[in-house]
Length: 101
Image 1: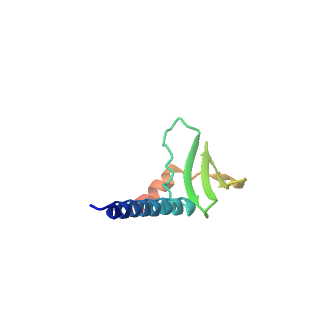
Image 2: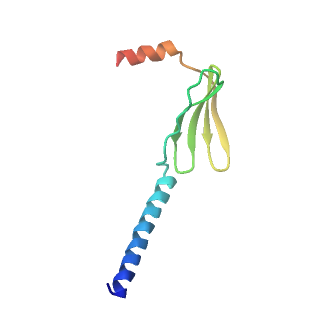
Image 3: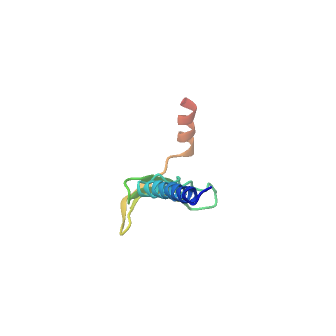
């Protein structure tokens, strides 16, 4: 192989690695990351019920403490409690909804 083939190979490799890095940056920027799953343990008082990406910099999370849920908006500079004192759904009601499906 000539030296020019080695240069082309290195350039192509750097181009592909740059594309992968750019796609990773885009995925993080637009919130396409993995979902947060809460650990289900009966002895814990605090649980993360659900998390949702609102936009590139904000996430809405639903937290359960004892039998009360709180909706919080997380951002890069500030956090905002949107609603507190939401009654947690009973386990019997959620099981009845699943049976209907």
